[in-house]
Length: 621
Ligand code: SAH
Image 1 (spheres, rainbow, N blue to C red):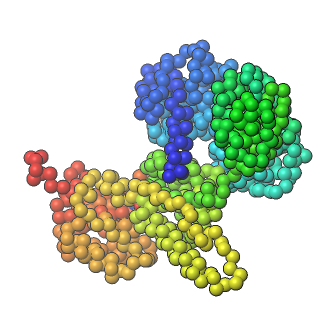
Image 2 (image 1 turned 90 degrees about the vertical axis):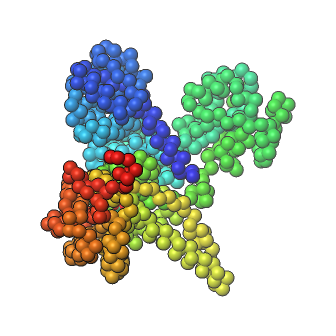
Image 3 (image 1 turned 30 degrees about the horizontal axis):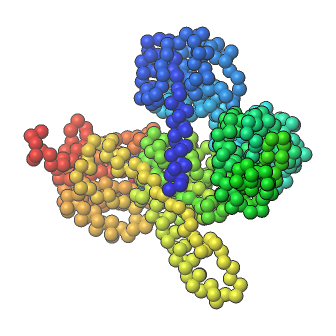
């Protein structure tokens, strides 16, 4: 699946960033901590710190972790710091690992993330001082980077970011389709915008030469078709490309790639120009180039290459566009044509709906895949408490939060947003397929498909029926369910090993299931000696259910049967009780609690609850 790949690629780039980490220590304790961090970053290089040796490594590593006083680090790196575009991430730790201070390149360099990862790993605290993080607002430079937008006038970033933080909103003009973070208000009028997302230079009366007041973000969406004589130098090619773009008021920063004929794929000047700006070169055969119509043909080009033209058809083929932004310009030995990357069609912009399980508690227990999917999403839909637990992942995103009983609303909203082409994550605590949102989302999708079929069948009868693509393809949304650790996994782990034999999970909530049916299931599970996991055991509105359930189970099981009561598993206020059927009501049980009732063979050992599987019959244990 395309998105799967995208997620994987992102994950990879993050990994690469941390792969290049170097750790410096001074004391023996610092060395112990550095070695421990190899558990987090296996490829990290560890060095004993000497102030004058840091410069040898600067530029070679993407991130630096210093285990020592901040002052020593500041003095050592001060002469090496250049700018936030190129400086590496610098994180400082005390030798006990209690604090991970993000000191330099918090956003672009990734120091904030590294500090958080280390703090999570060591059980310490990340010290983050960037204002956007502190205020839970998106960071403009990070958002631009994540969306592959090049910042033209970096000098404006602090000023514009401060304005954004103070006002909570900014006017943004964009001539590409892009999902905006919270607080970016789109406008069609470039003159009223503070941020301009465009490859054009003549849009607004505010040009990038007015730093501090406006920010220009350049989408990488220009493809340059190039033809040149053999032996043309890189600088001549560069001048020709820059000249053609500036004459047509297009930004060089928006250049994404170069396109040419296969014969020129190894032309030294072209390679060196492409290498200098990290541009990919796409090449095409003469036949491919000749298949493009509506281009200016040249006798000379045909004689030399077998292609009627090079620059124009190459740019069109590589961009997928059917017209050019700049027709062929001949400048000395070089011909240049420019095409814009074709925007994705509606079908290509297929919406995505992820139904994501965020596990029992904090970010630590969410799978890395689920974390990436959340980061990848434009919109996050969920219930307040679960969203609070994963705040760090949703910063800067559109978050739609509703009350607990509004799940139908939530799912309908999510489906609607995905159908409009957006990437949406519906968040469920635990696993999304266990007493949660996955089933509901599928029911809504199923209902919509049936509805659209019905409408299609009757549409012929309506004179003014307008064919709506949404109606005909209501499921043109890719849906993926991403599992999470359910309460039964988390609570069983906290208790020991109570689920080693067959078990039944039963929810005591009669909001959607008749109580009579719940009683019948309790009775059957108790009678057939299943270990029983009780979800939703008690709420203010139905305090008696747990007592009734206990009575039913006691008909079939001894009062000494072990019972585990786990509240808020894997959260800060977690509590774990191992008791038995007789005494269980002496303990607090609420909606954050899961109760596990052992089978007839479950035993307690060292305050752990264990259900034997039957190994004792096979081996002498
Ligand atoms: N989808 C969730 C379950 C939602 S139903 C999952 O897979 O875990 C809500 C019930 O789950 C709660 O009433 C409680 O019984 C249980 N639960 C959820 N998180 C829990 C936690 N951290 N500790 C203990 N029980 C929990």
